[in-house]
Length: 113
Image (cartoon, rainbow, N blue to C red; front, side, top):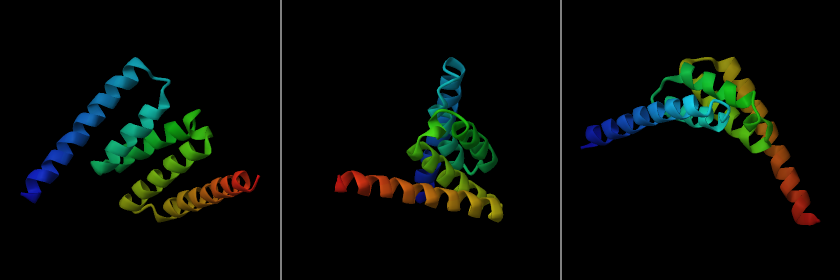
């Protein structure tokens, strides 16, 4: 039973990669699609492809927001961990933690105002 469930998830993520690829062909400037496809690639353990999509999203308007950058870096670090790129993983997670602290500080300031 578990194997069937895993196969369903695998199929779902393969379908997602295909759908996101089609969406990118229609809207190549929507880099949130790159992020979403990167997540699907990561679920498929296609970590090098995931890292490429996270890098595209990071270099775009999507990656300019603190939240977008945090999501991209965290997912990219997890992909790097899976492929054994430990130094790069550490650097990405360290940057993500720094950004998360900044987000929390901003939220704290907004609450105090």
